Amino acid sequence: MPVPRVTKEDLKQRLEAADAASRPVIVDARLKYPYEHSTVRLPGALRMAPEAIDPARLARDRDIVVYDSDPDEVVSARVVADLIDQGFRAAALDGGISEWMAANLPTEPKEALRQAPAAGGAAKG
Image (cartoon, rainbow, N blue to C red; front, side):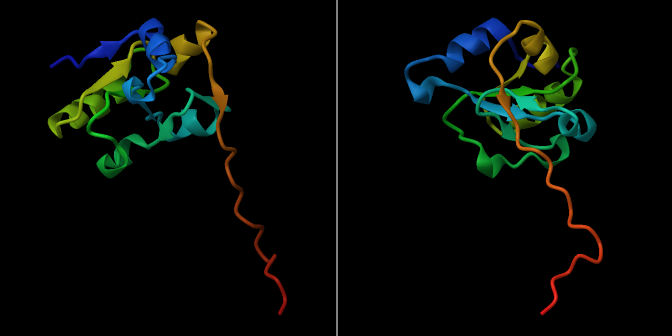
């Protein structure tokens, strides 16, 4: 069954809405490698790995837009289908973050990966 899609133009317009309650919740569901090798995300996006979507972190009274790095939205479509099955109003971003960035639409820096401390660097006490 095809899942609902939202265009980048429609999403941009909805993110600029004066009424914060009408803005959708954005979920970054990129796979690990594309996510870790990117420096940006869509404005205000929540990071949730596709295999670890946490419905408790999502508002049931707002629309949810899920994006990934695949222009065919393979991962985000699967996540959206799962969310719809759980009663959420969800749609995939048509073209994913690739088309969003190609259109020069707003992004924000994402948190840098935190490196694990080097082995043997334990504090003496």
